[in-house]
Image (tube, rainbow, N blue to C red):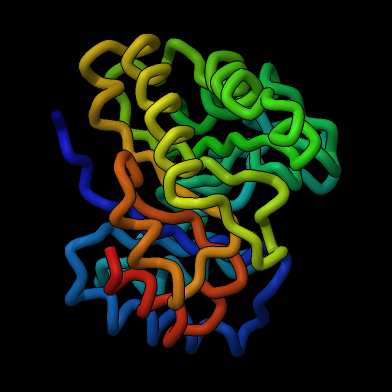
Length: 247
């Protein structure tokens, strides 16, 4: 079995001002000792400055979303080429907040993945079920269905990650049990292998949803967990580095 290098990615969401770059530098300073790959995905207005500041460090800078077109009349949107030009190396695609608040479908996510690959960005593709879907016993069906609809064939042989984020756990302080996480990650792994053959065995599967220093070690050492997509705890260097060190 291939063991992917752990990836710990911080999603700053709509948080961060110029002063927040100091936290990114502190994260980069502490991340050098970790065996994990480390990424920060700040708001788009900070991508260029952060990429320049962290250019000679271990930390990779990413975006939080892209449009599927390289340019055009899409007011307020950012293309993959723009992100890459600003210095980004990764991008989060299909986060549940985008799917829910902006009505993004699996097909839209797949188009964004293809655009990101064309621009040389490494996608982190998010999937996850709602509490209603989990209580109905449909969690595995929902998530594996999202995977099949969101991961285009163009990903074959390319570097990418999948992030499993149960929607009901994001920002709530709630987390699934270790056995529930392992069950879902095994199902995701099986789907990846079905879609991409042996390459699917090496794709990092991140867990996201109220990851914090107090539960990071338990989550990161669960079967088939290859890292974490961290929200609020990535905004403070001491909290984020504690998670990085747990990988």
